[in-house]
Amino acid sequence: MLLKTVNLTKYYGNFLALDKLNIEVREGEIYGFVGPNGAGKTTAMKILACLMNASAGEAYIDGISIMQNPAKAKKLIGYMPDFFGVYDNLKVDEYLDFYADAHNVPKGERGPLIDDLLRLVNLADKKDKYVDTLSRGMKQRLCLARSLIHEPKLLILDEPASGMDPQARAEMKFILKALKAQGKSILISSHILPELSEMCDRVCILSRGKAVVSGNIDEIMDTMGRRAKITIGFLADEDLQNGVAVMRTNDLVGEMVREGNNVEAVFNGTDEDISKLIKAFALSDVRIVSISKTVQSLEQIFLEVIGNEN
Ligand SMILES: Nc1ncnc2c1ncn2[C@@H]1O[C@H](COP(=O)(O)OP(=O)(O)OP(=O)(O)O)[C@@H](O)[C@H]1O
Ligand SMILES: [Mg+2]
Image (cartoon, rainbow, N blue to C red):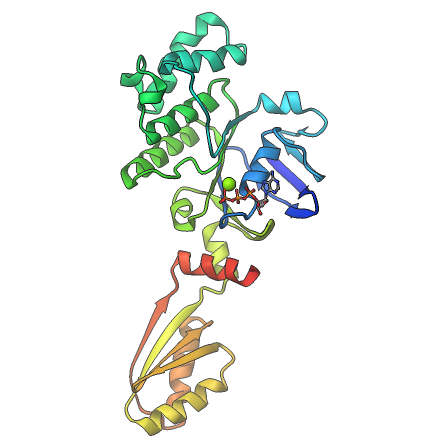
Protein backbone atom coordinates (compact mmCIF):
# COMPACT_ATOMS: atom_id res chain seq x y z
CA MET A 1 0.00 0.00 0.00
CA LEU A 2 1.51 3.32 -1.03
CA LEU A 3 -0.74 5.54 1.05
CA LYS A 4 -2.77 4.57 4.07
CA THR A 5 -4.67 6.79 6.46
CA VAL A 6 -5.89 5.60 9.84
CA ASN A 7 -8.75 7.57 11.39
CA LEU A 8 -7.31 10.80 10.05
CA THR A 9 -9.15 13.63 11.79
CA LYS A 10 -8.99 17.41 11.61
CA TYR A 11 -10.65 20.05 13.73
CA TYR A 12 -10.49 23.75 12.89
CA GLY A 13 -11.21 25.07 16.37
CA ASN A 14 -14.38 23.25 17.31
CA PHE A 15 -15.33 22.50 13.73
CA LEU A 16 -14.83 18.90 12.64
CA ALA A 17 -13.63 19.13 9.02
CA LEU A 18 -12.33 15.58 8.63
CA ASP A 19 -13.84 12.72 10.58
CA LYS A 20 -11.78 9.52 10.93
CA LEU A 21 -10.82 9.14 7.31
CA ASN A 22 -9.54 5.70 6.31
CA ILE A 23 -8.32 5.32 2.75
CA GLU A 24 -5.72 3.19 1.02
CA VAL A 25 -4.08 4.06 -2.27
CA ARG A 26 -2.29 1.23 -4.02
CA GLU A 27 0.91 1.58 -5.95
CA GLY A 28 0.26 2.63 -9.54
CA GLU A 29 -3.39 3.51 -9.18
CA ILE A 30 -5.38 6.69 -9.66
CA TYR A 31 -7.53 7.25 -6.60
CA GLY A 32 -10.30 9.84 -6.66
CA PHE A 33 -11.52 12.01 -3.85
CA VAL A 34 -15.00 13.23 -4.67
CA GLY A 35 -17.21 15.50 -2.66
CA PRO A 36 -19.10 18.77 -2.75
CA ASN A 37 -17.63 22.10 -1.66
CA GLY A 38 -16.56 21.95 1.96
CA ALA A 39 -16.44 18.14 2.11
CA GLY A 40 -12.86 18.13 3.40
CA LYS A 41 -10.91 17.20 0.27
CA THR A 42 -8.41 20.05 0.49
CA THR A 43 -8.07 19.54 4.24
CA ALA A 44 -7.15 15.87 3.79
CA MET A 45 -4.77 16.61 0.93
CA LYS A 46 -2.96 19.39 2.80
CA ILE A 47 -2.41 17.04 5.73
CA LEU A 48 -1.14 14.30 3.43
CA ALA A 49 1.19 16.78 1.73
CA CYS A 50 2.61 17.55 5.21
CA LEU A 51 1.52 21.19 4.99
CA MET A 52 -0.86 21.02 7.93
CA ASN A 53 -1.08 18.93 11.08
CA ALA A 54 -3.89 16.49 11.69
CA SER A 55 -5.77 16.68 15.00
CA ALA A 56 -5.74 12.90 15.35
CA GLY A 57 -5.07 9.76 13.39
CA GLU A 58 -2.15 8.60 11.30
CA ALA A 59 -1.07 8.49 7.69
CA TYR A 60 1.67 6.45 6.05
CA ILE A 61 3.29 6.95 2.71
CA ASP A 62 5.22 3.91 1.57
CA GLY A 63 5.20 2.83 5.20
CA ILE A 64 6.65 6.12 6.45
CA SER A 65 4.59 7.97 9.03
CA ILE A 66 3.95 11.52 7.87
CA MET A 67 3.54 12.55 11.50
CA GLN A 68 6.81 11.00 12.76
CA ASN A 69 8.90 11.59 9.69
CA PRO A 70 7.44 14.38 7.56
CA ALA A 71 10.74 15.32 5.91
CA LYS A 72 11.19 11.80 4.55
CA ALA A 73 7.53 11.43 3.57
CA LYS A 74 7.53 14.76 1.75
CA LYS A 75 10.18 13.54 -0.68
CA LEU A 76 7.77 10.88 -1.89
CA ILE A 77 4.97 13.34 -2.58
CA GLY A 78 4.27 15.85 -5.32
CA TYR A 79 1.50 18.21 -4.32
CA MET A 80 -0.51 20.46 -6.59
CA PRO A 81 -2.61 22.89 -4.55
CA ASP A 82 -6.07 24.09 -5.53
CA PHE A 83 -4.83 27.68 -5.75
CA PHE A 84 -1.40 28.82 -6.74
CA GLY A 85 0.09 32.16 -6.13
CA VAL A 86 2.15 34.92 -7.59
CA TYR A 87 4.84 34.31 -10.15
CA ASP A 88 7.22 37.24 -9.69
CA ASN A 89 8.09 37.74 -13.33
CA LEU A 90 9.62 34.34 -13.88
CA LYS A 91 9.84 32.57 -17.20
CA VAL A 92 8.46 29.04 -17.43
CA ASP A 93 11.86 27.33 -17.35
CA GLU A 94 13.15 29.65 -14.61
CA TYR A 95 10.10 28.82 -12.55
CA LEU A 96 10.76 25.08 -12.77
CA ASP A 97 14.46 25.63 -12.20
CA PHE A 98 13.64 27.49 -8.99
CA TYR A 99 11.70 24.51 -7.66
CA ALA A 100 14.29 22.02 -8.89
CA ASP A 101 16.88 23.98 -6.92
CA ALA A 102 14.63 24.01 -3.85
CA HIS A 103 14.45 20.21 -4.11
CA ASN A 104 18.22 19.89 -4.53
CA VAL A 105 18.06 18.49 -8.03
CA PRO A 106 21.71 18.63 -9.23
CA LYS A 107 22.37 21.52 -11.64
CA GLY A 108 23.49 19.27 -14.49
CA GLU A 109 20.27 17.25 -14.40
CA ARG A 110 17.87 20.17 -14.30
CA GLY A 111 17.93 21.18 -17.98
CA PRO A 112 16.98 17.78 -19.41
CA LEU A 113 14.52 17.14 -16.57
CA ILE A 114 12.74 20.44 -17.20
CA ASP A 115 12.60 19.75 -20.94
CA ASP A 116 11.09 16.33 -20.27
CA LEU A 117 8.48 17.71 -17.91
CA LEU A 118 7.52 20.55 -20.26
CA ARG A 119 7.07 18.03 -23.05
CA LEU A 120 4.91 15.86 -20.78
CA VAL A 121 2.58 18.73 -19.90
CA ASN A 122 2.58 20.09 -23.44
CA LEU A 123 4.31 23.35 -22.69
CA ALA A 124 7.58 22.85 -24.53
CA ASP A 125 6.85 25.81 -26.80
CA LYS A 126 6.25 28.10 -23.79
CA LYS A 127 9.62 27.47 -22.20
CA ASP A 128 10.87 31.07 -22.45
CA LYS A 129 7.53 32.82 -21.93
CA TYR A 130 6.71 34.65 -18.71
CA VAL A 131 4.51 32.54 -16.43
CA ASP A 132 2.09 35.45 -16.06
CA THR A 133 1.34 35.36 -19.76
CA LEU A 134 0.13 31.72 -19.68
CA SER A 135 -3.57 30.89 -19.74
CA ARG A 136 -5.13 29.41 -16.65
CA GLY A 137 -5.09 25.88 -18.06
CA MET A 138 -1.42 26.27 -19.00
CA LYS A 139 -0.57 27.52 -15.51
CA GLN A 140 -2.27 24.46 -14.07
CA ARG A 141 -0.21 22.20 -16.31
CA LEU A 142 2.93 24.09 -15.29
CA CYS A 143 1.98 23.53 -11.68
CA LEU A 144 1.62 19.83 -12.40
CA ALA A 145 5.13 19.84 -13.90
CA ARG A 146 6.37 21.59 -10.76
CA SER A 147 4.85 18.89 -8.55
CA LEU A 148 6.83 16.29 -10.53
CA ILE A 149 10.22 17.99 -10.31
CA HIS A 150 11.66 15.78 -7.54
CA GLU A 151 10.29 12.60 -9.12
CA PRO A 152 7.78 11.76 -6.37
CA LYS A 153 6.04 8.39 -6.19
CA LEU A 154 2.69 9.81 -5.20
CA LEU A 155 1.00 12.84 -6.73
CA ILE A 156 -1.59 14.66 -4.66
CA LEU A 157 -3.58 16.83 -7.04
CA ASP A 158 -6.26 19.10 -5.64
CA GLU A 159 -8.80 19.74 -8.42
CA PRO A 160 -6.17 19.99 -11.14
CA ALA A 161 -8.79 20.53 -13.83
CA SER A 162 -10.90 23.16 -12.11
CA GLY A 163 -11.85 26.06 -14.33
CA MET A 164 -10.59 24.33 -17.46
CA ASP A 165 -12.56 24.07 -20.67
CA PRO A 166 -13.56 20.59 -21.89
CA GLN A 167 -10.60 20.29 -24.22
CA ALA A 168 -8.14 21.28 -21.51
CA ARG A 169 -9.78 18.81 -19.12
CA ALA A 170 -9.38 16.06 -21.67
CA GLU A 171 -5.73 17.03 -22.08
CA MET A 172 -5.20 16.94 -18.30
CA LYS A 173 -6.78 13.48 -18.16
CA PHE A 174 -4.52 12.30 -20.94
CA ILE A 175 -1.44 13.57 -19.06
CA LEU A 176 -2.54 11.90 -15.81
CA LYS A 177 -3.07 8.60 -17.58
CA ALA A 178 0.40 8.93 -19.10
CA LEU A 179 1.81 9.48 -15.60
CA LYS A 180 0.02 6.41 -14.36
CA ALA A 181 1.50 4.44 -17.24
CA GLN A 182 4.92 5.64 -16.02
CA GLY A 183 4.14 4.05 -12.67
CA LYS A 184 3.09 7.10 -10.66
CA SER A 185 0.30 6.82 -8.12
CA ILE A 186 -2.18 9.67 -8.06
CA LEU A 187 -4.62 10.95 -5.49
CA ILE A 188 -6.90 13.43 -7.24
CA SER A 189 -9.89 15.43 -6.06
CA SER A 190 -12.91 16.78 -7.86
CA HIS A 191 -16.49 17.65 -7.08
CA ILE A 192 -17.67 15.94 -10.25
CA LEU A 193 -17.95 12.15 -9.96
CA PRO A 194 -18.42 11.25 -13.64
CA GLU A 195 -15.33 13.24 -14.47
CA LEU A 196 -13.19 11.11 -12.16
CA SER A 197 -14.94 7.80 -12.63
CA GLU A 198 -13.58 7.20 -16.09
CA MET A 199 -9.97 7.75 -15.10
CA CYS A 200 -9.88 6.47 -11.50
CA ASP A 201 -9.33 2.91 -10.41
CA ARG A 202 -11.14 3.63 -7.18
CA VAL A 203 -12.86 6.58 -5.56
CA CYS A 204 -13.94 7.73 -2.13
CA ILE A 205 -17.00 9.93 -1.81
CA LEU A 206 -16.60 12.45 0.99
CA SER A 207 -19.38 14.48 2.51
CA ARG A 208 -19.03 16.75 5.53
CA GLY A 209 -15.65 15.30 6.39
CA LYS A 210 -16.80 11.68 6.29
CA ALA A 211 -16.12 8.97 3.74
CA VAL A 212 -19.61 7.93 2.73
CA VAL A 213 -18.70 5.17 0.34
CA SER A 214 -15.53 3.99 -1.37
CA GLY A 215 -14.31 1.39 -3.79
CA ASN A 216 -14.30 0.99 -7.53
CA ILE A 217 -17.17 2.49 -9.44
CA ASP A 218 -18.93 -0.84 -9.96
CA GLU A 219 -18.74 -1.65 -6.24
CA ILE A 220 -20.15 1.76 -5.41
CA MET A 221 -22.98 1.30 -7.89
CA ASP A 222 -23.71 -2.05 -6.23
CA THR A 223 -23.62 -0.54 -2.75
CA MET A 224 -26.07 2.05 -3.95
CA GLY A 225 -28.25 -0.75 -5.27
CA ARG A 226 -28.00 0.42 -8.87
CA ARG A 227 -31.21 2.31 -8.27
CA ALA A 228 -33.43 2.53 -11.26
CA LYS A 229 -36.65 4.25 -12.14
CA ILE A 230 -39.44 2.34 -13.81
CA THR A 231 -42.33 3.87 -15.72
CA ILE A 232 -45.43 1.78 -16.15
CA GLY A 233 -48.29 2.62 -18.50
CA PHE A 234 -51.70 1.28 -17.45
CA LEU A 235 -54.62 0.71 -19.83
CA ALA A 236 -57.32 2.42 -17.80
CA ASP A 237 -57.76 4.25 -14.53
CA GLU A 238 -58.93 1.12 -12.70
CA ASP A 239 -55.79 -0.70 -13.84
CA LEU A 240 -53.71 2.12 -12.45
CA GLN A 241 -55.50 2.04 -9.09
CA ASN A 242 -55.08 -1.74 -8.79
CA GLY A 243 -51.54 -1.53 -10.12
CA VAL A 244 -50.53 1.02 -7.49
CA ALA A 245 -52.00 -1.29 -4.82
CA VAL A 246 -49.85 -4.16 -6.13
CA MET A 247 -46.76 -1.93 -6.13
CA ARG A 248 -47.41 -0.77 -2.57
CA THR A 249 -47.01 -4.37 -1.39
CA ASN A 250 -43.61 -4.63 -3.08
CA ASP A 251 -40.66 -3.64 -0.86
CA LEU A 252 -38.49 -2.82 -3.85
CA VAL A 253 -40.78 -0.05 -5.04
CA GLY A 254 -40.03 3.38 -3.64
CA GLU A 255 -41.63 6.74 -4.22
CA MET A 256 -44.31 6.78 -6.95
CA VAL A 257 -45.43 9.68 -9.11
CA ARG A 258 -48.55 9.56 -11.28
CA GLU A 259 -48.80 11.23 -14.64
CA GLY A 260 -51.95 10.49 -16.63
CA ASN A 261 -52.20 6.73 -16.92
CA ASN A 262 -48.49 6.32 -16.16
CA VAL A 263 -46.77 5.76 -12.86
CA GLU A 264 -43.09 6.51 -12.41
CA ALA A 265 -41.51 4.74 -9.45
CA VAL A 266 -38.10 4.38 -7.84
CA PHE A 267 -37.17 0.71 -8.10
CA ASN A 268 -34.39 -0.93 -6.08
CA GLY A 269 -34.43 -4.35 -7.71
CA THR A 270 -32.87 -6.26 -10.55
CA ASP A 271 -34.33 -7.06 -13.97
CA GLU A 272 -35.55 -10.35 -12.53
CA ASP A 273 -37.43 -8.41 -9.86
CA ILE A 274 -39.09 -6.35 -12.59
CA SER A 275 -40.28 -9.50 -14.31
CA LYS A 276 -41.76 -10.66 -10.98
CA LEU A 277 -43.58 -7.36 -10.69
CA ILE A 278 -45.02 -7.82 -14.17
CA LYS A 279 -46.20 -11.29 -13.14
CA ALA A 280 -47.82 -9.83 -10.02
CA PHE A 281 -49.73 -7.35 -12.22
CA ALA A 282 -50.96 -10.20 -14.40
CA LEU A 283 -52.07 -12.29 -11.40
CA SER A 284 -54.14 -9.31 -10.20
CA ASP A 285 -55.61 -8.75 -13.67
CA VAL A 286 -53.92 -5.36 -13.94
CA ARG A 287 -53.61 -4.48 -17.62
CA ILE A 288 -50.33 -2.76 -18.39
CA VAL A 289 -49.50 -1.41 -21.83
CA SER A 290 -45.87 -0.41 -21.35
CA ILE A 291 -42.98 -0.65 -18.93
CA SER A 292 -39.57 0.97 -19.16
CA LYS A 293 -36.56 1.21 -16.92
CA THR A 294 -33.92 3.95 -16.62
CA VAL A 295 -30.85 3.35 -14.50
CA GLN A 296 -29.71 6.36 -12.54
CA SER A 297 -26.62 8.05 -13.81
CA LEU A 298 -23.46 8.20 -11.76
CA GLU A 299 -24.09 11.87 -11.10
CA GLN A 300 -27.61 11.19 -9.81
CA ILE A 301 -26.27 8.51 -7.51
CA PHE A 302 -23.57 10.86 -6.29
CA LEU A 303 -26.11 13.58 -5.54
CA GLU A 304 -28.21 11.07 -3.67
CA VAL A 305 -25.25 9.83 -1.62
CA ILE A 306 -24.20 13.29 -0.54
CA GLY A 307 -27.81 14.45 -0.24
CA ASN A 308 -28.51 11.79 2.38
CA GLU A 309 -25.61 13.05 4.42
CA ASN A 310 -26.57 16.69 4.38
N1 LIG B 1 -8.38 27.25 7.77
C1 LIG B 1 -9.63 26.92 8.07
N2 LIG B 1 -10.21 27.35 9.22
C2 LIG B 1 -11.46 27.02 9.53
N3 LIG B 1 -12.24 26.21 8.78
C3 LIG B 1 -11.73 25.75 7.64
C4 LIG B 1 -10.39 26.07 7.23
N4 LIG B 1 -10.15 25.47 6.06
C5 LIG B 1 -11.27 24.79 5.74
N5 LIG B 1 -12.22 24.96 6.69
C6 LIG B 1 -13.56 24.34 6.71
O1 LIG B 1 -13.41 22.94 6.63
C7 LIG B 1 -14.37 22.37 5.74
C8 LIG B 1 -13.67 21.57 4.68
O2 LIG B 1 -12.98 22.47 3.83
P1 LIG B 1 -12.10 21.96 2.59
O3 LIG B 1 -11.46 23.15 2.01
O4 LIG B 1 -11.22 20.85 3.06
O5 LIG B 1 -13.23 21.38 1.64
P2 LIG B 1 -13.12 20.92 0.11
O6 LIG B 1 -13.75 19.57 0.03
O7 LIG B 1 -11.73 21.06 -0.38
O8 LIG B 1 -14.08 21.97 -0.61
P3 LIG B 1 -13.97 22.65 -2.08
O9 LIG B 1 -14.65 21.70 -3.04
O10 LIG B 1 -14.76 23.91 -1.92
O11 LIG B 1 -12.53 22.89 -2.39
C9 LIG B 1 -15.21 23.52 5.25
O12 LIG B 1 -16.38 23.58 6.00
C10 LIG B 1 -14.36 24.73 5.49
O13 LIG B 1 -15.16 25.86 5.75
MG1 LIG C 1 -10.88 22.12 -1.91
